[in-house]
Image (cartoon, rainbow, N blue to C red; front, side, top):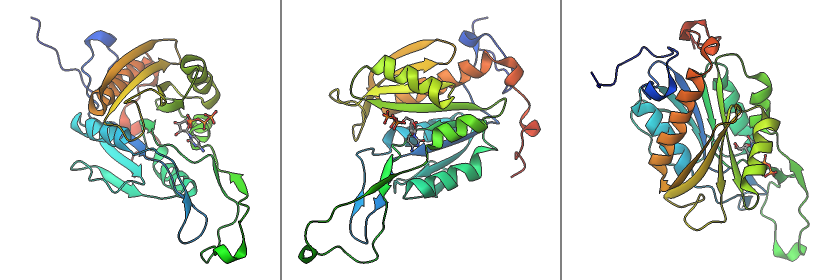
Length: 251
Ligand code: CTP
């Protein structure tokens, strides 16, 4: 019969036949750009709206995963999704690290600031003091840090926002950050990425599989990303330990 068969979560199956569900898995998603304060009024930010990350969290929850989202967006989340609100890259790193060891799948959407003001002033900077010179310092690369501490059975998904040489730049990030999958978008293209409701991405896997997702709404892109996660886990059967063998799964 041609009806799709239900496999228990974590069973290695032929990828094309695999049910694309995530029941029993812990999924950690990070969403939206960070804000790095300069003083009480002003911050350094970016245009990431969090829509793609939130769509992935909602879709993962709909597929039965236990989902935590670390976000700077005041967006509502689907029922059952745990939301941790953060603002800066440092807070985001702390929140992500508090949940990442227990996570089976980590999806690092969110445009984390690469630089923050080196000094955070307690008071508003006044015009009368003249034009200020703002010194920046680097923030920790959270994805690369997770790549270094990745344990067997964990699937790490990075994003790449590019304005040129999409495939080459994204491929380099995949390797450099130790991710299993990278979701790359050309954010300079019309209707793609930041603030839009639609996205167009190239999904690349460490094992060399690529999939082009044409311009689609962000929920459809979320489905494609999670399908790629399921396929990636299905093609690495030794990684698929039962959930209770994972460190931290009792938290
Ligand atoms: N990332 C991160 N922590 C940072 C910077 C980036 O975790 N401090 C993650 C992003 O969330 C994304 C991936 O790394 O999943 C790639 O981010 P991107 O901004 O595209 O690249 P960068 O690492 O900033 O590299 P570049 O400046 O060369 O574009």
